[in-house]
Image (cartoon, rainbow, N blue to C red; front, top):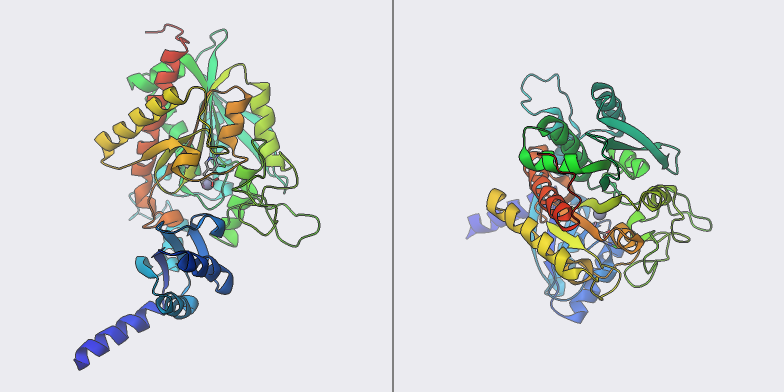
Length: 423
Ligand code: 9B3
Ligand code: ZN
């Protein structure tokens, strides 16, 4: 008995010295209320859902709890009989973060390639430069605008041939700063396209028929901030008049039922919609570029994490898109491919029915602008590591997303009869 007590005691002491992520499942409205309030009472970060307003009964809540709040939070949950479990014992989060930022390619023990590591913003700018220099015939750079802190927003254009009236697709990454797997995917995609053109049939068909625009980091200020100050930052870094809180959620700032239910007009909220639609230089730059190219761009992808979902419009209303059946079929096929090749489960469906009702997103806006094939991907994982996905998961996460992009792009080419007929 005594040893039992001691073991429990040791476990408890251990748990109160490390950062953890709790998976909490409130069952009643009263418990929902308690869980909603936890994040305001203690120094914790809500990982899932993105904002406390979305917490509802029977849905799992992922809460990052730093060691010093651990005891108070679990006491509170226990006193309300709220069930929870430890999903990650980040022993400790610091170690995981260190693992992600350690980038020493000169370390002889590191077997990972450039694309299997996370990169600082500086490294990514450097990579952009090198990529255009190494591939002058096929890759060019487009400066689409600049961020609030005046960093350039560079998109790469992959164009393998000069067919007249060539169609195009767009991929943006890194709207949300802490979703590091997203920029990693954009880099992966570019590298894969350049290496496997003429070696892989699907990517060859895609690039023969479409130009591809890739924006590796849509929110460079936020991304930089996650490397230097706060790993869990989501929004951009713009200042609001009348509030000391910083940042707008760029995926609530587009003009699609802007700032209705599912967004907030409070500058301190993680889902702050901004002062007006496209108030932010980053979302305005993307919207302007897409508007100016809407005749050629047929397919839009926005890459996020985490939770493993393939989403399409609408998120901003429960209404179905006019081509819902097509979008559903494409997402389903992509999800089945992932299941078959990588044994990983991806949910698919319209945003509002699959994740939550949320206005102002880039995919809904792109759709309404005339890009009828529009998708948001939520990459790995489903909460074990959440935003802190270790680097050795990058290749699998990116390959999964890649197969989904390829599947959908091929279908779009087929459906829109935009074949240019190269063999
Ligand atoms: C949200 C919206 Cl508004 C959209 N149109 N599509 C996807 C999402 C989900 C992402 C978000 O911005 O909350 C998940 Se990180
Ligand atoms: Zn996101």
